[in-house]
Length: 410
Figure 1 (cartoon, rainbow, N blue to C red):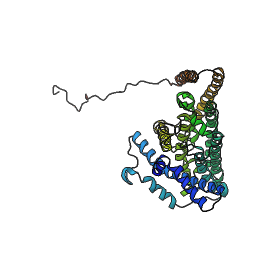
Figure 2 (figure 1 turned 30 degrees about the vertical axis):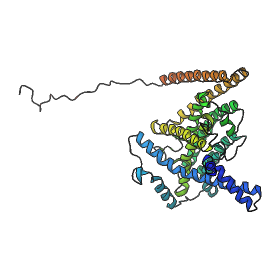
Figure 3 (figure 1 turned 90 degrees about the horizontal axis):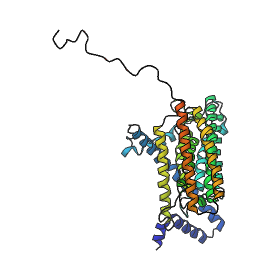
Figure 4 (figure 1 turned 90 degrees about the vertical axis):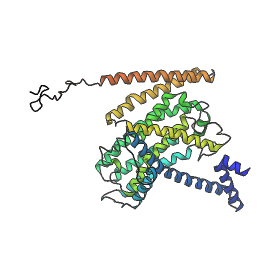
């Protein structure tokens, strides 16, 4: 029976076992809680950082196949140990500190950027019983932690004593702050539908995943999260073909590696948030009876969302800075505001009706707005078409010169 309980919910079983041992040693209950939370935080952070090695390899492999390349294929089977080799190389590389840097922000910046990503994991419900902290303001906490990452980027640019790094930090911060506006607006929609800002309550409230009720809000959030993370086609902060490295130009060794890890881990963390808020999180068949299945469902949904982001990164060209800002301020932000206002009106109007009717009306409104948005984008794209100059016909080389004899031998 104990083995069955362990398989059903191994994390809770181990936590209760450790708690009983510590209490048997005479440790005070409040210290037992502190020790268990400290161990859980250490394990969660370690797993997240080690997961980054696999994510880097998978992303390079997937994008390589999309672009008709092999990707990593030398170190280990299928190149799976390439990320380990890169990690070892980064650990042993020299730490170069340029002259004139401001040491405090320069050295703190990579730590702050990585910490801002890891802090989000503390409020993600991985199963019904596995959650770091069920904050009643978890959605607000996620937005606030994202702002901490922006501070780290600004500190990196400011502390580097490099004008190009500083300008890139300004550009990155402007991009992240801008796209947090539609992201915050769309986050209000699941908060209103569930009546709570706690991630655990939002997940439990999704008898039907919000993606199928408010697909437009989910798409806006997904696009805004890609841009806020600085991933292609919104990777203006670290455009590899245009800049040396962006705000982290002056970093090397492990400090540069921390920025690199934060970039890849942030992409999967955004997928975790999306899966929790719009895809029902850990919910699935048997997830309540067997909490370990909830973790499997959440990871599976998150990997699907993460793969969509990698697909976009590997196939779409980069936007210009003016195009990127136009997409946000002239399209995504007004569209998200209209969607939020309509949701408030519909929710108040249909307050006493059946949930099925409310969901159907919300879905219909989303589909109508999606059609209007598509037609608007198509119309604006038509204005940008450039008239082709010249002719597509090209002169052809014909074998009728003096060096080739004619068919009659002349």
